[in-house]
Image (cartoon, rainbow, N blue to C red; front, side, top):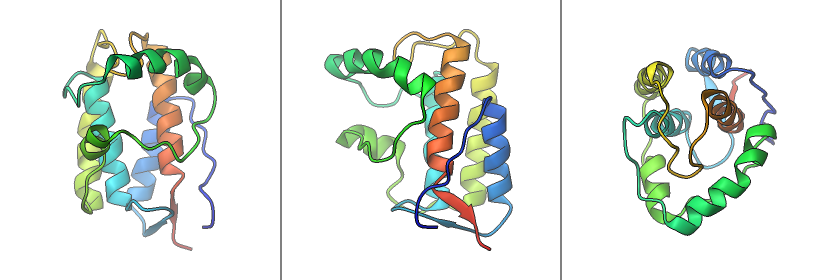
Amino acid sequence: MTKPRELNFRFPADAMAEAERLAKTPTRTLGRFTHGQILEHLARTFDVASGHAAGPAVPWFMRAMGRLIRGSLISKPMKPGFKLPGKAQSYFWPDHDVPVDQAMQHLRDAYERYQSTDPIPPHPFFGRMDRAQLDQLTCRHMALHLGFIDTVA
């Protein structure tokens, strides 16, 4: 794999099905994160989106920027290369490998909490969104990161 796979999901359940498929087979990754780290990252974002975890504080100017770019990120594929600020990076990305089965279980649990949370709390970076908007943001985010994982031929 020389470049990430281009994925597109209509619903978070579709993205979860792809995560489950990849967790059951030998894989390789592109980039600097392992399969387990990617799944753990996705789980941590579900934890924050559902209000299960607070995550790092987001400065006001970052919240303002998030609200400005929210529409674009909901409607278009996300592009790789965005680096989170230091505290967010260390919160959302584990600094060590995580076993795929452990990370996948965390992702399942976090997804279930996300699905059962009603109403959805305001997103710490993007602000108040309805379920459909947050679902689309989730689909784009998962498509970006799962695209860096592929099965071994």
